Image 1: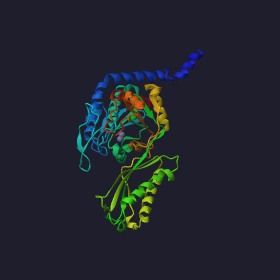
Image 2: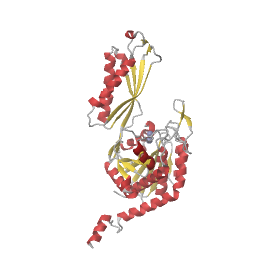
Image 3: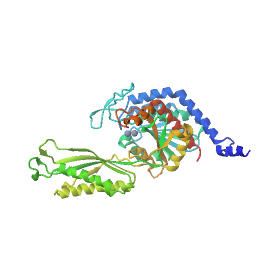
Image 4: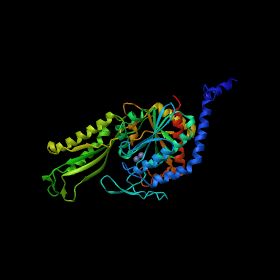
Length: 445
Ligand SMILES: [Zn+2]
Ligand SMILES: [Zn+2]
């Protein structure tokens, strides 16, 4: 008898008389049944999205394709919400408001995977140059999971109450979509969500697994353009010039001391010069050199400290070379800033517990924060302070991961022309975890 009571306690008996665990298990079984029944359609949908990518800010057909699916399920759609973004709302009685976001954009990458559904799409970028397009960051997986999860939740409508808000977001790769939606008054128009979830495909985690981070998950990302001025002239008469190539080289080396000497060793930060362009010919000293940098950090303080250090170093290197004040380098922080993504700790713990219940403890990994960026973080940084959580969805063929660990051959990373997630276990795990998490969040806290 005592043991029986102990069992009930452990099983988490609810006031309704049914153990909470049993309720969950029944829901999980139903989620899995729907997935098994409908999966083949979802894979076809995924292949269609994969073969028809659209780059950032151009996701017109993609958004329309998703919107059509969601309308058919009974969602009310607001399209072109600050660009190609859409908001789909399904009201299902009184209860929490749960927002799920998927990003829709592809990258200007020429696909090399050799898959039968590989993209052959060519398009034009903003500057009018012809570029290839590829879903090399897995956003096609995210969109398929969004639509499939909504199908599961619609079929299980009798088991939850509340409002489901789905976001199709443009231009994640250029940090434009989330910003535009917030500027358009997302929360004022659709109400403040109680929770917001997203996932991102992982190029290092096996398909079938998910990873989660509590607290800071992804970094502040700044793109910085620097123009270094000089006084050009003949390469054989350097004494009559001020050589901006030498100045740029000196600055780049000095930048290396920002992280190593100026920022506290306990604070993560990155300063990378990814591009340097200057000059036209062997024997001409140019007037200008252009640098392009990416900066990463978590805290505002470190972000500001890094930008301040860049301005100081460039200014004094120029002045020390004898350049006048009006030839101090121009340091421009581009608009494509992505703020750090902070996963609400309570929410991350809650959903990770659900993940463990539905896909098994061994398939849920606590991962490290990374210095990559994601504009999903913006949805949690408004004054409404919405608790958000983004988690990693394993996408790598487990066999290939094993081989790579054995022989040291690196796997294609996100953004690689060879990036090819394994669809079935990736999509199924994405839908399982997202649907189960949403159902849990629709229960009152
Ligand atoms: Zn990406
Ligand atoms: Zn991405």
